[in-house]
Image (cartoon, rainbow, N blue to C red):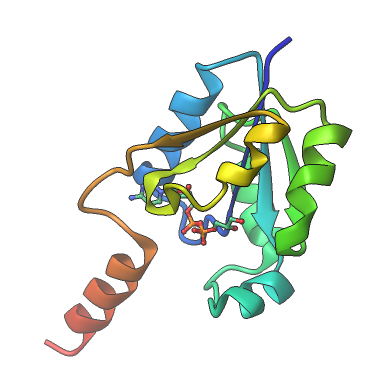
Amino acid sequence: MKTIITYGTFDLFHYGHVRLLKRLRAMGDKLIVAVSTDEFNALKGKAAFFSYAQRVEIVAACKYVDHVIAENHWQQKVTDIATHHIDIFAMGDDWQGHFDHLKQHCQVVYLARTDEISTTDIKVDLSQQQHH
Ligand code: C2G
């Protein structure tokens, strides 16, 4: 049983998120996603459009996701890796290098982001459409 974990806000769930989760699920047998709580997002300086509960409902409905947990703070990853017997920790490559310290606990993988899409871009495009 090979278990993968990834972390994120996953606001305004889009095909960039789906393509990441699809690739991660294909790397093993079980994919766990730690969704950032609203409180943790505040620490990241992010304000999600959807609440934590709504983002969990959406991510949990994704066929590539087997289990969803809360991401409450930066320091929980080592504990999560132990608790959930994680084999691979993976993130999009905008985080390249940031989590290499986890290599003592499991494999660390950074996957290419999907170009041309981001939650921020969606928000900007929508607000510009409204003002035309
Ligand atoms: N992502 C992607 N392609 C995109 C947009 C996002 O592959 N076009 C990936 C990101 O690289 C990340 C995941 O989707 O791995 C979730 O993205 P965010 O919700 O923006 O995650 P972030 O706020 O970076 O949270 O502890 C880690 C943090 O919680 C990461």
